[in-house]
Image (cartoon, rainbow, N blue to C red; front, top):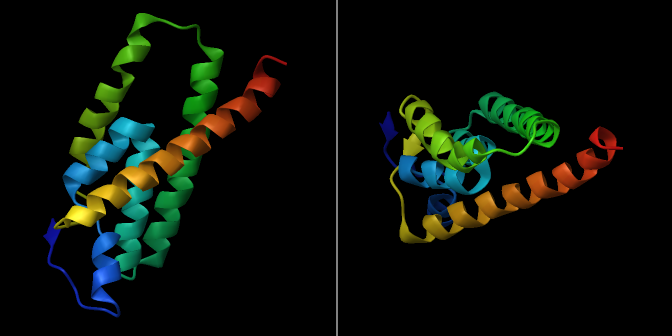
Amino acid sequence: MLLPKQCYGNERLRSFISFSRPQIILAAAIASLPGGFFLFVFNYLRMGMRKHAFFCLLFAFLLSVGLVVLFLSLPASRIDRFFPLLSCVLMFFIARSMPAFSASWLSWLFAVFFALIWLAFEIVLGAWLYQFIHG
């Protein structure tokens, strides 16, 4: 469902952190599925749905931990190259049923910025968990 822009507080700031479906799919391409869920957190916060935002943030964190552990414990293969494509396809179908907003040009920059922050979190998490898995 595509939601209209709502006027609460500073509309200009809120339009920067309101993400559309293509932006969420781009975040999934950059930072895997948890990157897309991380942008859903901002959409839920904009709508005032804090419980949903907390659930999405918790789900993104747990999914990140699970994916990092999975990739560190499995041997490398050619199939790993298709994971970003699989993430985009899955996020496309998930994003169809989640709230999204119309996008402004500056929110594209914020979408990439937040996805890169989440990717950096996943890299640090992977480096930290690598010590425990490969001891």
